[in-house]
Amino acid sequence: MFSNHYSVELVADMLSTSKSTVNSWIRKKTIKTIKPNGKTFIQKSELKKFDKLSFLFSKDKYKKPKPKKKWTVVELFAGSGGLALGFEKAGLKCLFANDIDRDSCETLKKNRPKWNILHKDIHKISDGEFKKLKGADVVSGGFPCQAFSYAGKKLGFKDTRGTLFYEFARAVKIIKPRICLAENVRGLISHDGGKTLKTIINIMEEIGYKVIAPQVCQSIFYEVPQKRERLFLIGIKKGSGLKFNYPNKISEPYTVKDALKKGRLYKTNVPNSEYQKYTKRKQQIMRKVPPGGNWNDLPEKMKKEYMKGSLHLGGGKTGIARRLSWDEPSLTLTTAPAMKQTERAHPKEDRPLSVREYARIQTFPDNWMFSGNLNSRYKQIGNAVPVNLAKYIGYEIIRSLNRY
Image (cartoon, rainbow, N blue to C red; front, side, top):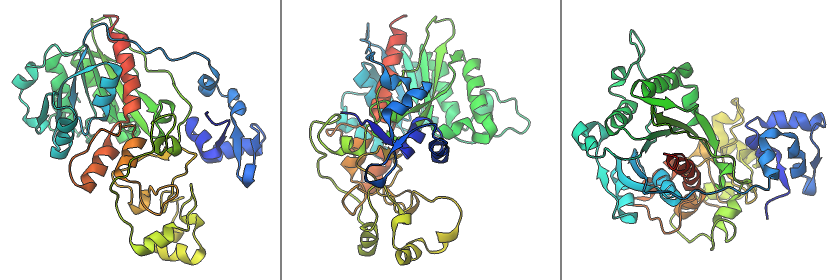
């Protein structure tokens, strides 16, 4: 069963607002709270006041489309396959996947030996190689965001040469898919005062694609037990007559318990796997942090020891010595679970999350194996698009293509 009440922090995340804003509503009694065990919670019924969360009370079920034919995808910057696997689960066929990282490509080859995987720097993929992929219905990829140089330039397609976005656009221009999809971090919206995103949209228009208004999708609403946001840009080939709608919010938030224990998401408890080790002293320190807590919960003497010079610096620093809570979604995973500023400790055990725990929070299946050393595996998983989020984006791509 889903919860009938939510923490203040989770409600803030669900509404894309700050915790202090929600607390101000509580003080003004705009929303009512309950306090089991002394902790403040907001009852689900109170969320009826917010149109943004009306889906929580809807009885309509999401209708999953079935592909009318084998719609194909070319995946660039594929990483360890979060986006590609999600698309496959939706019903799209991977025609080609590329990444510069050897371990990521080995991961893809290990799990999908029949896929056409190319381990190569995208700058070195020739126009001729891309021409062989003509006929693909979709080109997708999460290109790393690089700063563009604006001085004295008109910001056209050729002006972005040398950036990874240019390589993505080059592939789209040659392959001419019906739909192209770029995903990135939310920060792309404000990167360089919004100029970078505007340039990207202008160039997509220049090479023949109408860009649907970019949208930030919150993973917590798509069967992902993680507070992760991804920005999606969808381009529709001009003259194709296609339309695309982003998926409506699908589910209430899933929790770390859903990820690691048998239940709604997985049929078994998470399997044992390797994890980074704490030093003996750090283990002693983390033992003092309760589920959902952080360095603020440490005894005063231990705070000073662990925080050192940063103790009196500004900012909440809530990622430091952070232990996850069973009953909340995970914080956004990073490329390493034991980095001091972005700690991701197990809810109960005094250690960082393991590789398989990381993978489950990103909604990879347990049989999806990752190549490379421990640090590489964490990095691959931490950089991935959550599989279930990608699946729902894939469903909407299929719904769009089915109208062709």
